[in-house]
Length: 292
Image (cartoon, rainbow, N blue to C red; front, side):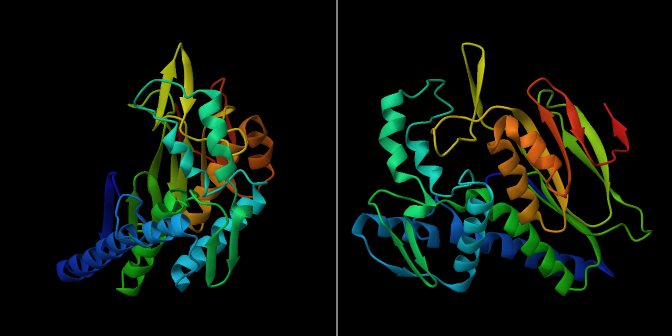
């Protein structure tokens, strides 16, 4: 998945551990093969190619479930969590350190909006040529949950799976002690912001520090507002602790997409969370074992 991945599993013996680990790895690779935008043979690529010919597709159940979930996120976020906004990649190149022009952004905005997709399960159709969807905001977290489910079915009751910082805890250590999960400091990569005790569930973080560019001293994050086509500002990062990694990741992303409104939204979300705002203030309702 283009990122560092790790599993730590407790098993009855080495054979059980190796078999469970391989099954989990196979499941992650299966999901990546289906939903990678970098593979011409992926399900996602076939969906996006249909935009060019106006062809209606029938989606399989797994893909339909992910699309339904993305639509729920779209509605709950007021349209900010929008899997059609990936087309903005064509004008935002964060390795170039050059800002797109307003005209370039304006040319892309008409292609964004999940309300421009015709979706009557299982039938899918783009209304406009040139539209795309991208499951990049949910596929990795979904894969973490699925990998954990595979391990559980293989008899693993204690373990941790991490896919690029998104973590799913299968269960605590065998002595019932928690896993210690460090949350990265958004401005000091070599230092943890704090450390959490996690017995089960998932932790996912969204931040402005993985992909960004600095232009004239201003930080431009890869998280783009689908209405304006421009990077959001307001929070440096948000971390969510909940049962499913998929849910944790999307809530964290929505929090950042809401900008300055993300703080009250997260505070009212009813989930365990923490956030760091642009001024470096840390707040939330989780209880770290240490705070740096």
